[in-house]
Image (cartoon, rainbow over all chains, first blue to last red; front, top):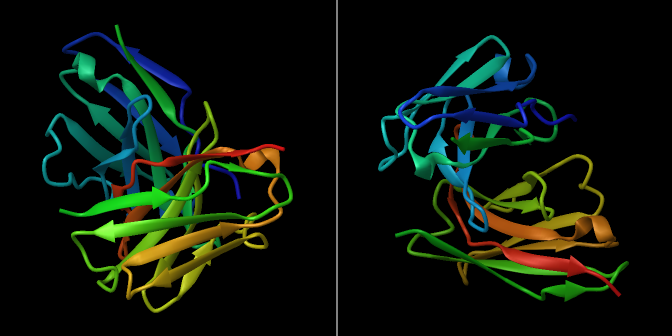
Length: 111
Length: 119
């Protein structure tokens, strides 16, 4: 089964807002509210930033928010900071055997 | 707090079997969570491998299912990964993680361990 589709890269200036999209199908993103987002800095393990489409785990800044429309989920980061520069991955539950799909990842550059 | 730590050989030969163990501390592996494995080839994205519940129920990525086995040892609070018939394409950083049952979010991760497949 194909991975979820994310843009390879996005960029923004400090203080701005950016959004990263994650496109799937009705068998995964479109059918269930089980989308997660992960932040990964170089050489580090991924960190859960959003789960169940829009819920932030304890300790995650309110600058990070998630949403979904149809088969596409989005991660929005407001008030960009230098420390937000990282790779971001989406994932979703899928009804098909695989159970979990990851996106290909998006590199966020803070200009 | 919940901590996970991967352990196993860093170098394995092609055609052989990779064996990794994830030791969980600060939390019981018999609680209502899945426990999973994810890998990341150098310079590439994350690839989901599979998950296990403490009862032994497993789910695997379909394309890896014929080569992968995940098992659990509740007495040691550990779970393990075996991948057989290794090729260069299996070279990756392997992560273990705790996985929520409801939405399959991976909320706690180990630091990862690099496994290189080479003769």
